[in-house]
Length: 459
Image (cartoon, rainbow, N blue to C red; front, side, top):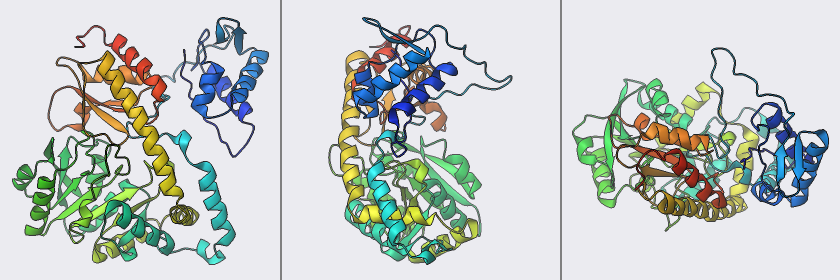
């Protein structure tokens, strides 16, 4: 049975027509092959969070048009008379678009709080003065900086005032601006966790950093190994290390603070998914321990949506001002309406309510995936705390992590091999995202992976 990648815009209305159009295009372009059995209308309605009648109407429309056939006892299938799948362009690579997301850290965008966000946007458009739409402070609108300062003090135990906050277009831009400021006199030798996100390293180098990898173990970055280097700064994901999922231990936190102070060094803290801790309250951010040494970066990319491109940098006053000036020189600041909307969303409790809902749902999805792995692939070990949007999987000896990741992708799971994130070879492992994997599909996905890997030992 096919898993369908169906995107709908609830604001436009005509949901049944949108579902029909999405399926029609999938059939025309060969993503749904002739004979493919579609999910039952009740199951697809549950996935899309619409009424069953909406899906029934879409299916009936496509049956009438000849794209689908429906038979009692056989369900609904793609008709055999549909057009063949087009060939990939000569010399090109056909793109794979998995249903459950493109990155292991991708949130479920189908659960974006559209109605509440729309209410915030409407409020902003109805109340903001016309002058607010002019070129503004490149550091961000004051209302959002104030709301974020209060939120970070309350939720992340940060030591922050509005003047320490600079609004940026996500963590990636925030890190680029920070390194641009730090490297204005000379390139920085930046210590990074090993393994670390392979997507981040090119932008760090472009921003003026030479990277030195520092191993991560069960307690986080190895500070003793860090001391053996001559780094000017260190970049960490201490609340939930990516990709291993471990937390920087209290002893390592203390040692890291000592390392920073004794050498007049800077710590860059990437707080990318700290809101999603499932077994307990998340540990406070490092910035709260040493606001004079730690620059905190965060965003709404995991909590709401990457496409909003809204993030923040929290830095000591002199560095915050330098980052603000650099932002002004780069592109004059972030979109204003979205900033005011996020400020309203925070102020009215919409953000907190959405996070509570998503924590419950993501915990359910993680538990389902981990339980399915324990039952069907007991030789695969889950590493890391109960948190975030991804799991780190240690594979049995001899398994090919690239083959496992490719098989997972074919099954619609966002997965990547760990080898591309390491500075040196290590035991086989993959990182797999669960945020877009409905709990009821977890066992099916893991069983599919077991079949794909049946030529290798699984226990």
